[in-house]
Length: 112
Length: 117
Image (cartoon, rainbow over all chains, first blue to last red; front, side, top):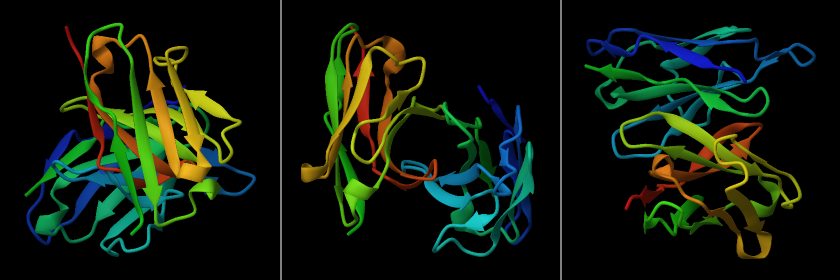
């Protein structure tokens, strides 16, 4: 099974500053035949279900602000919030979908 | 409105059973793979199960295999999770989610399952 890890566990960022979250998979999640990484990012605000931010490692879901971006390939991935807003306070999870069982990282909490 | 609404959670004793439902609206349910994901209080997310568009292909996490059964009724736009032999560590919020190539692009608000004596 592929195991997902994230760093840091938590992060305090000033409003308007950049936030960077790292995600690592225990094996590659790259489908080299289609050159697509089976990696998604989610945001979960307190008391709410998660919502999809990024899929295929770098494709923003419709309606997601462009301050959110995803990058990386193979086993190492990054979620960047270019200019943190107050509404971005949340826990962020990465998830691989490169075969069963799908798995999530442990989450990174972002605070102001 | 595009949404998923879960129901059926509650308090059950260890060894008991519950059946969760997830009603879909606002999109073509019969074209969508569907999943269940759970989250214990204060913890992270765990994928539980998935079902293909016509219900002929189902997959489970090892921790629930043999105890949980996923199913769907496309005529009713509803998916289900039958949970038997429940254990204390099954206690969680259970989310219904729509699959998108294995990512989850629509989530319900969740239903709380508490397994306790």
